[in-house]
Every structure is written in structure tokens, then in C-alpha cells.
Length: 195
Image (cartoon, rainbow, N blue to C red; front, side):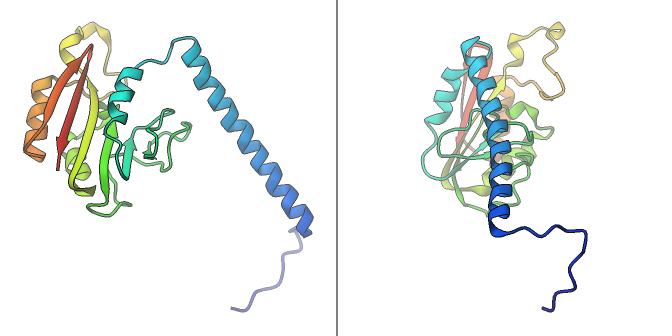
């Protein structure tokens, strides 16, 4: 390769100046992340964040290499975080959890998701999750239970696209995986299946 001539508008940096510029950018990133962490800690202190019991249940499936879809600020320990939101702490990849084209088939031991009702095509997402799971791999996910809400509760809020009943979740899982375990916990549905 033969480089072209240098642009006169580009400032030349010494090695020391380059290192200082890198440190400065990293300090800005650190301040941003610390602000996000502080916000999450304030939520916990103010009891505005909930669901620790459900997170612990999902964590119990995290054995081996796996994905935490819609991870938000609370990434399952050891998981690879996937979230379409850019402003969350847990994500390693910013894309929708229903298109995992960046992950090879049969490469994951588990997939967990605490916001599976945000996808507009449940069969598509379940088939995509099945594709990346190894044989014997598990999925564990949570959705809101439609049986617990009134029409006036405004649960379809732009992020949550669908509400399900335990029976509909069972039908979807049986169609894709041929097996499932579906339970309810308060206003939530907890679902698992094995590939």
C-alpha cells in the first residue's frame, strides 16, 4: 500500500499527546458509566427496581456460554448481553434479540430473557433462539401474564408489544421445542424449554 500525502488540516500528535487524548476519552466514558451505575443503585435504594426474585430464577439457568436477551442494566452474570437499547449497562451487542445472525448455530448453552413480550413475532424469536442453542441447551424467559391485567392498565406501552397467557406460551413453546415448563409468579409467566 502506498499512502497518499497527509492532510494539512490534521494535527500531528506526539506519542505522549496520543496517550493523553486516549486517557481523556476513557475518562469521559468512565464518567458516563459511573452515572449509569449511580442511577441503577438509586433505583435499588428507592425500591423502584424490582424483580430480583425473577432475576435469580433466570440466573439459575446460566451454566456455560449463553445470552441474556433484553438484558438492560442487570446482565446475568457470565452471559453475553444483547439489547436494542444503547443506554443500558448490560449489553455487549446492540441489536434485537430476534435476529442473532452474529452467533453461529448451536453455539449457546442457554438463553435467558426477562422481556420476551417486546418481540412482535413470538414464533420467529423462539425459532431464532432454538437455532443458536446447542442440543440440550435451555431457554428461560419471562413475560407479563395477561390474566392479571385489566384493559385499562395500559400494559401495551410501546416496549411491551403483546400480553400472553400461560396457555399461549405453552402452545408456542410446544410448537417450536416440543417441550416446556410454564409457571406463574405474581403477574408474570416464567417459561422454560430445552432443545
